[in-house]
Image (tube, rainbow, N blue to C red; front, side, top):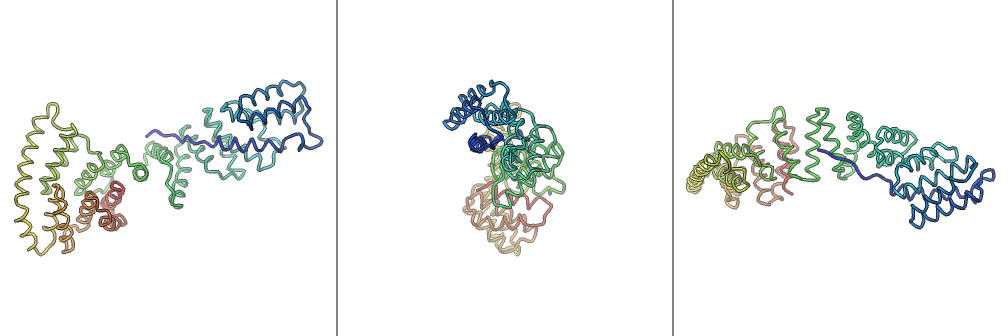
Length: 413
C-alpha cells in the first residue's frame, strides 16, 4: 500500500513570504540598519520581479546584491531572506532551504515572522530528501506554537520516510480521529501511510480498521480484496459467515481466484442455495477464472451438475412455499426467499424473506437480518436495508456479523 502525502504548503507560504518582504524595505528599516544603494537597488528589483511573477529574474537580481563587497550583517540578512523567497517561487527548493536556514534565527524576526519562515522549512527539507531535517523543523515549528495542519502532514511523511512507524502512528491517529469528529473525510494518502506502518508493526486490528476507512472513501477493488479475507482470519470470526463474506466479495468484484469461486459455490450448495451456486460458477466462467487450463473439464462438469440441481430446486419453489407458510417458525419461508433471491428472483424472494423474518426466525435471527439487508442492497432497495444493517453494525458482536453489516453498507452506495 505505497503512499505519500504530496500536498506541501509551498505555494501559499511563498505568497506569505513575498508579502513579508515589505517590513524589510529600506524605508521601514531602523535608522541604525539600512541598505546601501548598491544593495538596495538589485533587491528592490528582485521584489518587483517577484510581484510580477518572474522568480528567475528575481534570483538574478539577488545574485547582483550578493556580489556587493563588504555587506553589513543586515544586508546579508535581507539578501538571504529575499533569496529564499525568490528560490521558493522558482521552485529551487535546495537554495530556498539554505537561505531560510541562515535567517530563521535572526533577531530581526518577530515571533510571527519567524513562525512564517519555520512553516515552510519542513516542506523544503522533505522535498530535498532530508526527512530527518524535516522532522526537526516541524518539531520546532510546533514547539513555537505553530498549528498549521500541513506541517503535521509533512511531519507524518518525514517520519514514514525515516522508518519511524511508531512515531508516525502517534501523529496520524489523532489527525484521522479529528477529521472524523469534525465530519470530514480523512485523506486517503494519510490512511495509506497509516496502513503501511500498521502492517510493519503487525497491528492487524488497526490495519483492518484503516482498510475499512479506505473503502469508505475510495472503494477500490484492491482494498476490498485485502480487507475481506483479513476479516475472515480475525480471531473469533464465525465459520457460518464465510458464505456471506464471499457474497460481499462477489458484490464488490473482489471474487477473482479459482478457489474463491469454487468455495463459494460449494458453500452455497451446502446452504441449500443451488441457484446461487449456479450463478457463482457462471460468473467464474464469464470472468475467465474457471473453464481454463487443466481444470477446465472438471469446472464444466461442476457447472453442468449445479445447473441441474438449480433447475430442480426452482421447479419446487411453489410447492415449497406452501409448506413453508404452514410452518410454525418463519425460518423455512425465509430460507426459501433467500434461495429465490440469490438465484436471481429477488422480486419473488425478498417478500418471502421479509414475511419469514416478521413471523419469527428462531435460529440465528441476526444472521437472517444480515442476509435480508444484503439482498435488499443488491436489489437497490437501500432505504429498506439501511435500518436493518445499521442496527446489526452497532451490535457488540465479535463473530464478524456486525463488521459485515457495516461493510455491506459501505459496498453498496
